[in-house]
Image (cartoon, rainbow, N blue to C red):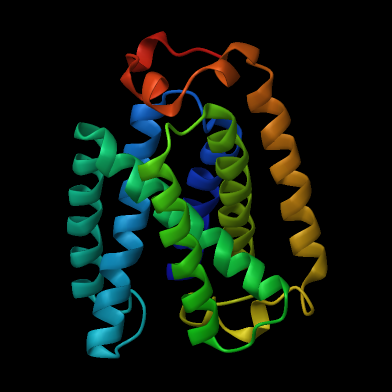
Length: 214
């Protein structure tokens, strides 16, 4: 039941990020921050108590509290929202790339994901992040989250071992191909708003949510 709920949540948020990554930017980054915060909070409880991912009420409570904290920070402060968004999306993309290349050890997936997260966050800090870059990153990260959610829903992997070797591309190549196709669709959908490419992420984030239309 937990895997199904997590899968549905991942598919919904991943699809939103993949297809609508540049629109309603402020709200979107807050939602993504909440998603990342929930994963961090629940993961911390799992690591510290060794009772399984979201197998206890404490895991859900801490996950929700950290999600609310991350969402509030991402909504109120541009710098925090960009660092959270780019670091978490970089972590997702780095882990997916490492898995696709056949990295088998969970620590290896986590390390590569963390390095990619730090790299993207650093790029976001030192540059005036162009909207086009966010479109590409959000489409790829959103597609990865959608595929992970579908794999959870169809019992291809479980929440406890989603980072294990059994989730590598060698074992589930069709899932990864599907993710690449979905990412390409997301880029095309977002690029249809040609004017967005000329803006920076800060300009889009500063616009009222209601004024941002496809």
